[in-house]
Amino acid sequence: QRANLVLLLGTLGGRDALLLLDRLGVYLYLHGQYADMRAAYETVRVADPPLATVAEATLTLLRHARGEYEEAAVRYRACAKELEACGDRRTHAWVSANLAHCLIGLGRAEEALQTAAHARELFTVDGSTAELGWVRAAESAALLRLGRIPEAREVDRTALAAARSTGDARVIGEALHGFAWSSLLTGNDHEAAAAITESVTLLRGTKVRSALAKSLRTLGAISASRGFRAEATAAFEEARALARELDERPRELSCTRALAASWIGEGRAAQAIPVLRACLDEYGEMGGRPAAGLTWLVLHRAYVAVGDEEAADQAAAEAAGLADPRDASAAALRRALLALTEPA
Image 1 (cartoon, rainbow, N blue to C red):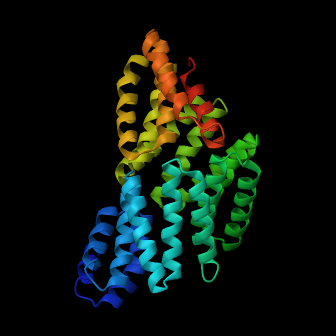
Image 2: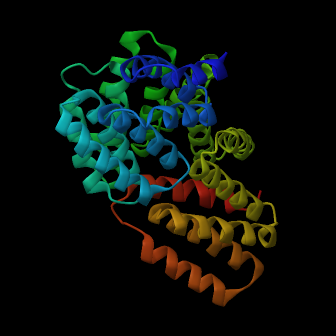
Protein backbone atom coordinates (compact mmCIF):
# COMPACT_ATOMS: atom_id res chain seq x y z
CA GLN A 1 0.00 0.00 0.00
CA ARG A 2 2.88 2.36 0.85
CA ALA A 3 4.52 1.68 -2.51
CA ASN A 4 1.24 2.30 -4.34
CA LEU A 5 0.85 5.70 -2.68
CA VAL A 6 4.38 6.64 -3.68
CA LEU A 7 3.62 5.65 -7.28
CA LEU A 8 0.36 7.61 -7.16
CA LEU A 9 2.29 10.81 -6.48
CA GLY A 10 3.72 10.70 -9.98
CA THR A 11 0.23 10.86 -11.49
CA LEU A 12 -1.04 13.83 -9.45
CA GLY A 13 -0.75 17.53 -10.06
CA GLY A 14 1.60 19.55 -7.89
CA ARG A 15 -0.90 20.78 -5.30
CA ASP A 16 -2.65 17.41 -4.94
CA ALA A 17 0.72 15.71 -4.62
CA LEU A 18 1.66 18.12 -1.83
CA LEU A 19 -1.57 17.46 0.05
CA LEU A 20 -0.93 13.73 -0.08
CA LEU A 21 2.72 14.16 0.90
CA ASP A 22 1.77 16.33 3.85
CA ARG A 23 0.19 13.24 5.38
CA LEU A 24 2.20 10.42 3.83
CA GLY A 25 5.54 12.10 4.54
CA VAL A 26 4.82 12.40 8.25
CA TYR A 27 3.83 8.74 8.44
CA LEU A 28 6.92 7.58 6.55
CA TYR A 29 9.28 9.71 8.66
CA LEU A 30 7.84 8.69 12.01
CA HIS A 31 7.97 5.02 11.05
CA GLY A 32 11.49 5.24 9.69
CA GLN A 33 10.51 4.43 6.11
CA TYR A 34 13.22 6.70 4.73
CA ALA A 35 13.70 4.96 1.38
CA ASP A 36 10.01 5.36 0.49
CA MET A 37 10.06 8.89 1.82
CA ARG A 38 13.06 9.78 -0.34
CA ALA A 39 11.39 8.28 -3.41
CA ALA A 40 8.18 10.19 -2.73
CA TYR A 41 9.83 13.57 -2.43
CA GLU A 42 12.15 13.00 -5.39
CA THR A 43 9.00 12.31 -7.43
CA VAL A 44 7.62 15.79 -6.76
CA ARG A 45 10.89 17.73 -6.64
CA VAL A 46 10.57 18.46 -10.37
CA ALA A 47 7.24 20.25 -9.83
CA ASP A 48 6.59 23.99 -9.49
CA PRO A 49 9.14 25.93 -7.38
CA PRO A 50 7.24 26.12 -4.05
CA LEU A 51 6.50 22.40 -4.09
CA ALA A 52 10.04 21.61 -5.23
CA THR A 53 11.40 23.58 -2.27
CA VAL A 54 9.27 21.60 0.19
CA ALA A 55 10.54 18.39 -1.38
CA GLU A 56 14.16 19.59 -1.25
CA ALA A 57 13.79 20.57 2.42
CA THR A 58 12.52 17.10 3.27
CA LEU A 59 15.31 15.38 1.35
CA THR A 60 17.72 17.60 3.26
CA LEU A 61 16.27 16.28 6.51
CA LEU A 62 17.28 12.79 5.38
CA ARG A 63 20.83 14.02 4.69
CA HIS A 64 20.83 15.51 8.17
CA ALA A 65 19.75 12.19 9.70
CA ARG A 66 22.68 10.48 7.95
CA GLY A 67 25.13 12.97 9.48
CA GLU A 68 25.80 15.12 6.41
CA TYR A 69 25.70 18.20 8.63
CA GLU A 70 27.65 20.71 6.53
CA GLU A 71 25.78 19.93 3.32
CA ALA A 72 22.44 19.83 5.14
CA ALA A 73 23.05 23.25 6.70
CA VAL A 74 23.76 24.78 3.28
CA ARG A 75 20.63 23.22 1.79
CA TYR A 76 18.42 24.19 4.74
CA ARG A 77 19.51 27.82 4.35
CA ALA A 78 18.75 27.81 0.64
CA CYS A 79 15.30 26.30 1.26
CA ALA A 80 14.57 28.80 4.03
CA LYS A 81 15.38 31.67 1.69
CA GLU A 82 13.01 30.31 -0.97
CA LEU A 83 10.22 29.66 1.54
CA GLU A 84 10.53 33.15 3.00
CA ALA A 85 10.24 34.60 -0.49
CA CYS A 86 7.01 32.70 -1.21
CA GLY A 87 5.52 33.46 2.23
CA ASP A 88 5.23 29.87 3.49
CA ARG A 89 5.77 30.64 7.17
CA ARG A 90 4.95 27.20 8.51
CA THR A 91 7.37 25.27 6.29
CA HIS A 92 9.95 28.03 6.75
CA ALA A 93 9.64 27.55 10.52
CA TRP A 94 10.04 23.79 10.20
CA VAL A 95 13.16 24.18 8.04
CA SER A 96 14.60 26.72 10.48
CA ALA A 97 14.03 24.34 13.39
CA ASN A 98 15.79 21.57 11.48
CA LEU A 99 18.67 23.94 10.72
CA ALA A 100 18.97 24.76 14.42
CA HIS A 101 19.31 21.06 15.28
CA CYS A 102 21.87 20.66 12.49
CA LEU A 103 23.94 23.58 13.79
CA ILE A 104 24.03 21.97 17.24
CA GLY A 105 25.60 18.90 15.66
CA LEU A 106 28.22 21.16 14.10
CA GLY A 107 29.00 22.72 17.49
CA ARG A 108 27.61 26.16 16.57
CA ALA A 109 25.37 26.65 19.59
CA GLU A 110 24.98 30.45 19.48
CA GLU A 111 23.83 30.33 15.87
CA ALA A 112 21.55 27.39 16.66
CA LEU A 113 19.88 29.33 19.48
CA GLN A 114 19.24 32.34 17.23
CA THR A 115 17.85 30.10 14.50
CA ALA A 116 15.57 28.27 16.93
CA ALA A 117 14.26 31.59 18.26
CA HIS A 118 13.46 32.65 14.70
CA ALA A 119 11.66 29.35 14.08
CA ARG A 120 9.57 29.84 17.23
CA GLU A 121 8.50 33.29 16.05
CA LEU A 122 7.44 31.86 12.70
CA PHE A 123 5.47 29.05 14.37
CA THR A 124 3.61 31.47 16.64
CA VAL A 125 0.79 31.89 14.13
CA ASP A 126 -0.28 28.31 13.48
CA GLY A 127 2.33 25.93 14.86
CA SER A 128 1.09 22.79 16.59
CA THR A 129 2.33 21.62 20.00
CA ALA A 130 4.42 18.93 18.30
CA GLU A 131 6.04 21.46 15.97
CA LEU A 132 6.73 23.89 18.79
CA GLY A 133 8.13 20.99 20.80
CA TRP A 134 10.71 20.38 18.06
CA VAL A 135 11.73 24.04 18.22
CA ARG A 136 11.91 24.00 22.02
CA ALA A 137 14.10 20.89 21.86
CA ALA A 138 16.56 22.82 19.69
CA GLU A 139 16.44 25.81 22.05
CA SER A 140 17.10 23.63 25.07
CA ALA A 141 19.96 21.76 23.40
CA ALA A 142 21.58 25.03 22.32
CA LEU A 143 21.21 26.56 25.79
CA LEU A 144 22.81 23.49 27.37
CA ARG A 145 25.72 23.70 24.93
CA LEU A 146 26.17 27.29 26.10
CA GLY A 147 26.06 26.27 29.77
CA ARG A 148 22.75 28.04 30.41
CA ILE A 149 21.23 25.13 32.31
CA PRO A 150 18.43 26.90 34.26
CA GLU A 151 17.08 28.46 31.07
CA ALA A 152 17.15 25.12 29.27
CA ARG A 153 15.41 23.51 32.21
CA GLU A 154 12.58 26.05 32.01
CA VAL A 155 12.22 25.50 28.26
CA ASP A 156 11.93 21.75 28.83
CA ARG A 157 9.47 22.19 31.69
CA THR A 158 7.24 24.40 29.53
CA ALA A 159 7.46 21.98 26.61
CA LEU A 160 6.49 19.01 28.79
CA ALA A 161 3.49 20.83 30.28
CA ALA A 162 2.27 21.73 26.79
CA ALA A 163 2.84 18.17 25.58
CA ARG A 164 0.92 16.59 28.46
CA SER A 165 -2.04 18.84 27.70
CA THR A 166 -2.37 17.19 24.28
CA GLY A 167 -2.68 13.64 25.60
CA ASP A 168 -0.63 12.49 22.58
CA ALA A 169 1.79 9.72 23.60
CA ARG A 170 4.33 10.61 20.92
CA VAL A 171 4.39 14.31 21.75
CA ILE A 172 4.63 13.58 25.49
CA GLY A 173 7.35 10.97 24.98
CA GLU A 174 9.48 13.35 22.95
CA ALA A 175 9.04 16.17 25.49
CA LEU A 176 9.96 13.82 28.33
CA HIS A 177 13.26 13.16 26.58
CA GLY A 178 14.35 16.79 26.87
CA PHE A 179 13.02 17.08 30.41
CA ALA A 180 14.93 13.96 31.45
CA TRP A 181 18.22 15.27 30.10
CA SER A 182 17.97 18.70 31.73
CA SER A 183 16.91 16.97 34.96
CA LEU A 184 20.18 15.06 34.92
CA LEU A 185 22.16 18.23 34.32
CA THR A 186 20.48 19.96 37.26
CA GLY A 187 21.38 17.07 39.56
CA ASN A 188 17.91 15.51 39.69
CA ASP A 189 19.09 12.01 38.83
CA HIS A 190 16.00 10.15 40.05
CA GLU A 191 13.66 12.55 38.23
CA ALA A 192 15.78 12.12 35.10
CA ALA A 193 15.57 8.33 35.31
CA ALA A 194 11.81 8.38 35.85
CA ALA A 195 11.24 10.78 32.95
CA ILE A 196 13.38 8.90 30.44
CA THR A 197 11.83 5.57 31.46
CA GLU A 198 8.36 7.01 30.89
CA SER A 199 9.52 8.42 27.56
CA VAL A 200 10.76 5.04 26.35
CA THR A 201 7.58 3.32 27.53
CA LEU A 202 5.33 5.79 25.73
CA LEU A 203 7.34 5.77 22.52
CA ARG A 204 7.39 1.98 22.37
CA GLY A 205 3.61 2.13 22.17
CA THR A 206 3.67 4.58 19.25
CA LYS A 207 6.20 2.68 17.14
CA VAL A 208 7.93 5.97 16.31
CA ARG A 209 11.30 4.33 15.91
CA SER A 210 13.53 7.38 15.48
CA ALA A 211 12.26 9.06 18.64
CA LEU A 212 12.44 5.73 20.48
CA ALA A 213 16.08 5.29 19.44
CA LYS A 214 16.85 8.79 20.70
CA SER A 215 15.23 8.16 24.09
CA LEU A 216 16.88 4.75 24.42
CA ARG A 217 20.28 6.33 23.83
CA THR A 218 19.56 8.90 26.52
CA LEU A 219 18.35 6.13 28.84
CA GLY A 220 21.76 4.57 28.30
CA ALA A 221 23.58 7.78 29.19
CA ILE A 222 21.47 8.45 32.28
CA SER A 223 21.83 4.85 33.46
CA ALA A 224 25.60 4.99 32.99
CA SER A 225 25.79 8.24 34.96
CA ARG A 226 23.89 6.58 37.81
CA GLY A 227 26.14 3.53 37.83
CA PHE A 228 23.69 1.07 36.25
CA ARG A 229 26.07 -0.44 33.73
CA ALA A 230 24.00 -3.40 32.49
CA GLU A 231 20.91 -1.24 31.93
CA ALA A 232 23.05 1.33 30.12
CA THR A 233 24.66 -1.11 27.71
CA ALA A 234 21.33 -2.80 26.97
CA ALA A 235 19.78 0.57 26.11
CA PHE A 236 22.72 1.55 23.91
CA GLU A 237 22.58 -1.80 22.10
CA GLU A 238 18.87 -1.42 21.33
CA ALA A 239 19.25 2.22 20.30
CA ARG A 240 22.14 1.33 18.00
CA ALA A 241 20.18 -1.44 16.31
CA LEU A 242 17.26 0.92 15.65
CA ALA A 243 19.52 3.71 14.40
CA ARG A 244 21.27 1.28 12.06
CA GLU A 245 17.92 0.16 10.60
CA LEU A 246 16.94 3.80 10.08
CA ASP A 247 20.32 4.83 8.60
CA GLU A 248 20.67 7.46 11.34
CA ARG A 249 24.44 7.30 11.35
CA PRO A 250 25.26 9.93 14.02
CA ARG A 251 23.05 8.17 16.56
CA GLU A 252 24.47 4.78 15.63
CA LEU A 253 28.01 6.12 16.06
CA SER A 254 27.30 7.65 19.46
CA CYS A 255 25.90 4.34 20.69
CA THR A 256 28.89 2.47 19.25
CA ARG A 257 31.20 4.86 21.11
CA ALA A 258 29.38 4.21 24.38
CA LEU A 259 29.58 0.45 23.89
CA ALA A 260 33.29 0.75 23.08
CA ALA A 261 33.70 2.67 26.34
CA SER A 262 32.08 -0.24 28.16
CA TRP A 263 34.54 -2.64 26.52
CA ILE A 264 37.38 -0.69 28.13
CA GLY A 265 35.78 -1.29 31.52
CA GLU A 266 35.50 -4.98 30.67
CA GLY A 267 39.21 -5.28 29.88
CA ARG A 268 38.73 -5.17 26.09
CA ALA A 269 40.45 -1.85 25.38
CA ALA A 270 42.45 -3.25 22.47
CA GLN A 271 39.18 -4.18 20.77
CA ALA A 272 37.75 -0.71 21.41
CA ILE A 273 40.62 1.26 19.84
CA PRO A 274 40.00 0.52 16.12
CA VAL A 275 36.26 1.00 16.61
CA LEU A 276 36.79 4.41 18.21
CA ARG A 277 39.23 5.48 15.50
CA ALA A 278 36.66 4.53 12.86
CA CYS A 279 34.09 6.68 14.70
CA LEU A 280 36.54 9.59 14.64
CA ASP A 281 36.99 9.28 10.89
CA GLU A 282 33.24 9.53 10.35
CA TYR A 283 32.78 12.39 12.80
CA GLY A 284 35.52 14.23 10.93
CA GLU A 285 33.60 13.82 7.67
CA MET A 286 30.40 15.02 9.36
CA GLY A 287 32.01 18.07 10.94
CA GLY A 288 30.74 16.98 14.37
CA ARG A 289 33.26 18.66 16.67
CA PRO A 290 31.51 17.97 20.02
CA ALA A 291 31.09 14.29 19.15
CA ALA A 292 34.69 14.01 18.00
CA GLY A 293 35.95 15.56 21.23
CA LEU A 294 34.09 13.01 23.34
CA THR A 295 35.38 10.19 21.17
CA TRP A 296 38.98 11.33 21.63
CA LEU A 297 38.37 11.31 25.38
CA VAL A 298 37.23 7.68 25.33
CA LEU A 299 40.13 6.78 23.04
CA HIS A 300 42.50 8.34 25.59
CA ARG A 301 41.14 5.95 28.22
CA ALA A 302 41.61 3.03 25.84
CA TYR A 303 45.24 3.90 25.17
CA VAL A 304 45.91 4.31 28.89
CA ALA A 305 44.41 0.86 29.47
CA VAL A 306 46.76 -0.78 26.93
CA GLY A 307 49.79 1.16 28.17
CA ASP A 308 50.39 3.30 25.07
CA GLU A 309 51.37 6.56 26.79
CA GLU A 310 52.31 8.49 23.65
CA ALA A 311 49.00 7.75 21.93
CA ALA A 312 47.13 8.47 25.17
CA ASP A 313 48.76 11.90 25.46
CA GLN A 314 47.92 12.71 21.84
CA ALA A 315 44.30 11.66 22.33
CA ALA A 316 44.03 13.76 25.49
CA ALA A 317 45.40 16.79 23.65
CA GLU A 318 42.93 16.31 20.79
CA ALA A 319 40.04 16.01 23.25
CA ALA A 320 41.12 19.16 25.08
CA GLY A 321 41.40 21.08 21.81
CA LEU A 322 37.82 20.26 20.86
CA ALA A 323 36.27 20.75 24.30
CA ASP A 324 34.03 23.73 25.04
CA PRO A 325 34.07 24.51 28.78
CA ARG A 326 30.55 25.94 28.52
CA ASP A 327 29.03 22.75 27.10
CA ALA A 328 26.94 21.19 29.87
CA SER A 329 25.64 18.40 27.65
CA ALA A 330 29.15 17.32 26.71
CA ALA A 331 30.16 17.40 30.38
CA ALA A 332 27.28 15.08 31.27
CA LEU A 333 28.10 12.72 28.41
CA ARG A 334 31.74 12.80 29.45
CA ARG A 335 30.79 11.61 32.93
CA ALA A 336 28.61 8.85 31.51
CA LEU A 337 31.26 7.62 29.09
CA LEU A 338 34.04 7.70 31.66
CA ALA A 339 31.86 5.75 34.08
CA LEU A 340 31.58 3.02 31.45
CA THR A 341 35.37 2.87 31.06
CA GLU A 342 35.82 2.07 34.75
CA PRO A 343 36.45 -1.60 35.61
CA ALA A 344 33.21 -3.56 35.55
